[in-house]
Image 1: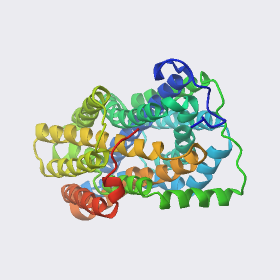
Image 2: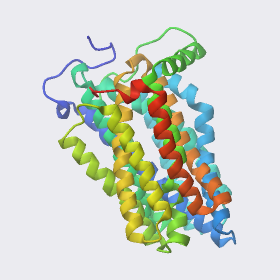
Image 3: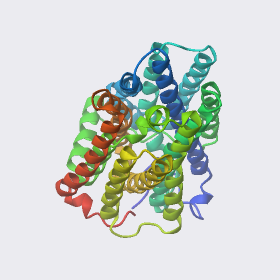
Image 4: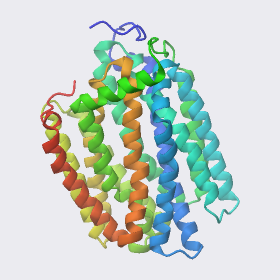
Length: 418
């Protein structure tokens, strides 16, 4: 298969010889690291403010969930427009503009923290702006990477992109959680610096970063993207599995509650709990790099989601800090495994002309599982209490694993990743 017009010419050497891709990869990892560290800090700060204002555990948990909802709503509203923009305009330029907005959001949060913020509405307002920025950044950035490598290296590039996303999304909260012990303002300042470094890395990306022109109206192209996702059962099954498993099993959204009021380990313990998931994810990332998944990818992925749900249940019922940390290590490793396979399957089966739109739909589902999952966890905690909410999430993740394995046999039987 010849490469698309926007792809660079095949080059000698492996993936590490593709300089443009390496700069892109560094920027992608730094941006994800920053956003996840920022998210962990917001959760801790908002929970603390809500408790300081007299709210009980359930009310403060719900306040944390509102931040997730504030980030999800603009993502939901802008997803189709963002996907269309990524398939029509310069993907590097869109990414850099969005990263500039995220530097501003992190700086604003740092300033608020330094001022001794005691109300929540300014944080909610910044979360809305951040959600709008992520709506455009995710599809543009996801679709940019495959343009920077020759076709023979595409599968490996997709795998490296998935590892960057998942490693950053696990390590970032650990960084944010640990920095919270020093100061939320310091954590936000570090996030701002990481966003800036990510934007600077993208300035070093050379080559064609604008997709080939496509005929048709914006809504026709959007419908085409949605139809592709719906008709491709591997893609739709993988995206929806991520949505419902993480939406229900979002124990990490309750970590501020557990650290503050269940395990009573404070900000330092919160950082260590966040680090637990990072340890598990990092270990699995190294294992995948050394021993790539070559066969039975679908079954391995479903197994990872099942372990994720079981580890969530252990964490939910634990009253021991050591056991809770161990459960989070296992949870992080299982999440790394399953998400790596899902993202690789999605990108490997999607043609370049649709990558922006498919990434936008995938980003909407991932946003629903993460940001909306925070709201679901906060809402469930408001009704069931934090332990009941976490138990509900673990049982839900296990149930989704079984149901999806039956509904999407093509996904379950997926064999090779590349």
